[in-house]
Image (cartoon, rainbow, N blue to C red; front, side, top):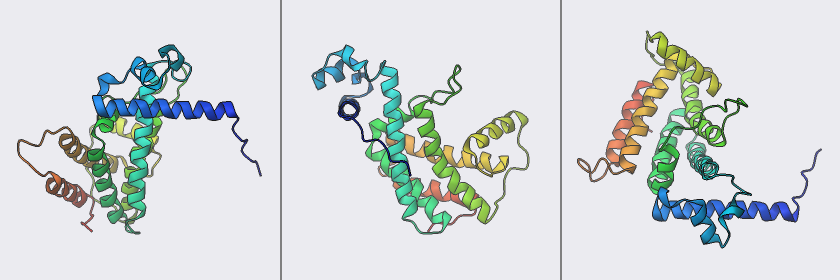
Length: 236
């Protein structure tokens, strides 16, 4: 049995500083918005010099990526906890996961905006590795995709009979990334359901439904039910 080495004092101090940098950046993001998250502002709040922060994050971009990865992981943890507390039925777990995603997003609009405000970086062209945020984003997507695959395995549902070749090739690549035993038609339906639900949550988080709704939750539930019916799942 291999025992993990006890972190040295220097390693513990570095880890604590990294956590403080991240917490400070998050506070600035929540209180003042994305534009307020700068290395200079973080250093000032922490009583450091801006150049000193470069020992921990070589650029603002790397810090923002680390923040996005942390937020994706935090959201995934919340969704997984809701899923695991919903009982054995995969349909019940899917409803719980979707509601948990909306709940976390509404409680953390600034974090949501940073996570989804721009596309995740693709594979590193030199090292063919995923960025930290990309890996965390795939974990987040994988929570929903795994539930989708579980529902498919229990009872395959109707999927599109024809998929345009230019779309099918992209879906093949995506299902390979997810590593799940789903046919391409099911992956198309998965993305269709996700676009519906994510779009609903994003519009609510950013306040774009006030023109019609004072309380968007019933509309979210209606959209969730429509998406669920497409895959043969009933509201729990």
